[in-house]
Image 1 (cartoon, rainbow, N blue to C red):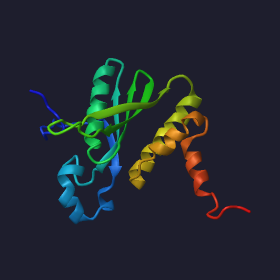
Image 2: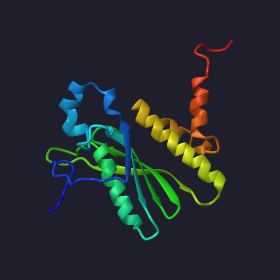
Image 3: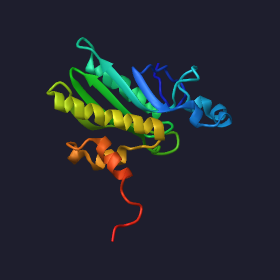
Image 4: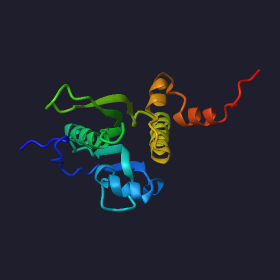
Length: 181
């Protein structure tokens, strides 16, 4: 039996970690109306509208399984917003985004496209680990707290990864509101 996301015949997903907006950020009436779409758990204290997922596998775990799990997690998240997912396997951290395409016609189902944004060897040296751990942590925290998609900014700066994302974010906050003379 095939399971698809579009006919609501959905298997339960259990990402290793996921992040999203805190329930208190959305009025209770709206949460109740949208609960079938944005709340992935029966626990009231877990994030709603998840938009950052992590799947991790140990040395004996399968990268193929982690990739399928991350894709499925992100597909569920894409029903609400464009999520970010990551896979950690064998010392490599890969960052992905997933988006929903429009249906190609009546009776046709939309497709979910998972695109790798970046990958890092987290075990190459301490500097790389620290920089990229901070980078992904800042991205995850920004998506969780602000409920915004920071991927546009992140993708614009992939050529400047030697600067940490947090420094870009902090410096942007200190720019003057009016142009300098």
